[in-house]
Image (cartoon, rainbow, N blue to C red; front, side, top):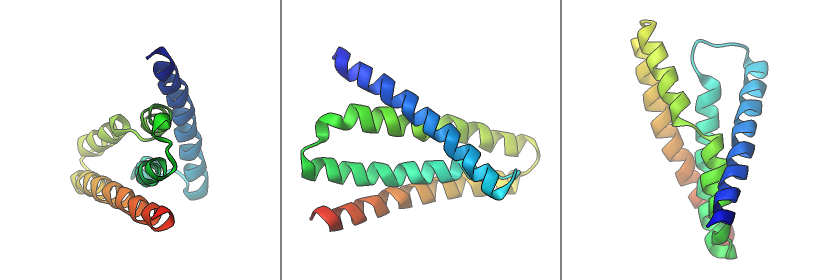
Length: 126
């Protein structure tokens, strides 16, 4: 149990660091936007990678890495706490339409990213 906890903690630190760097990179590419594009992109990418890992781990016998990869790295990389804050911030600024668009796009595109990851990974390892 302690080794799994250590894997989750190390993966979480790595995932959070990657989220920070990805956010900086996205903002450098597109500039500061009132719409939270960076967090949206990170959540969609993380969901896609989660789908790929689920299938890859099952086919390669790597499910023992789930605490490190799924709970740790991808759990630290994607964030719905930041998602929630961004949605409420948009709402409180009076950008109700943007808040609704952000919530809808985040949910739909993240689920779509997960499904795409599953389909692609199943095509590779089927």
